[in-house]
Image (tube, rainbow, N blue to C red; front, side):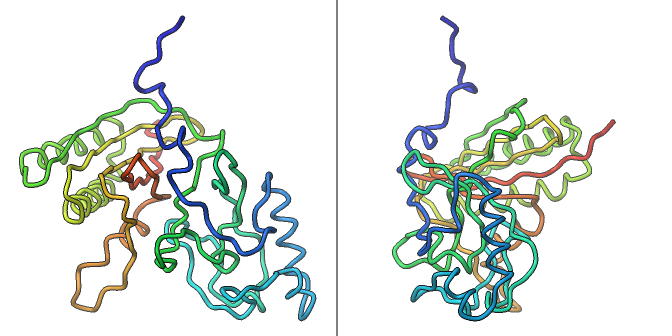
Length: 271
């Protein structure tokens, strides 16, 4: 019988999908087993007007055609900010989510269609798609490095930074070195500042149709990161805005009783 290595074993969060609460949609049509059906439903919605559009939308107390909301953090370009009563254009690219234990489906990631992206004690304004999942097209993982950073241990933090800098250069990602190091440092610092335990920093190199470098920072807290608007002279609150600006995609996953904030960078082909 072939042995299973550490890298081959599935994540605990994937074996126990009930560890993350599903989004509360408020209407059934923005989710489906296939992405094509969602795009067809969106096209039908934006082609109608007045009462017909309202009937297709299925308004609730939280969302109507006149509700104004922002984009979902971590999914740049997804969804619009104008009111749905005037919406037009193509459907936001559907993503994979967990709607119930062991029930992964496709979802239109548009906050105007979702009553609450995550049920977290009234923190609906966080609106993070925690259940984002890669489809089967996700490239295969290659090299992997990991460091534990304990709070109050400057040596461990320096080692993690050195690991990141060395790996970025060794994996041919020097063109994005500044972005990767800045975002990784931000995630590590946030984990150490807002939790009482250690941070686990993992770097992975992915191969496939495009090369990607993934940074994960895991901690023991289940509290979600919040994107806040900082004042003109403020610094606190800009961390997630920085992550969203500099990365190609990012998200949050449950890890047992804690979480992992992850982000990915597309690396130009050195060839």
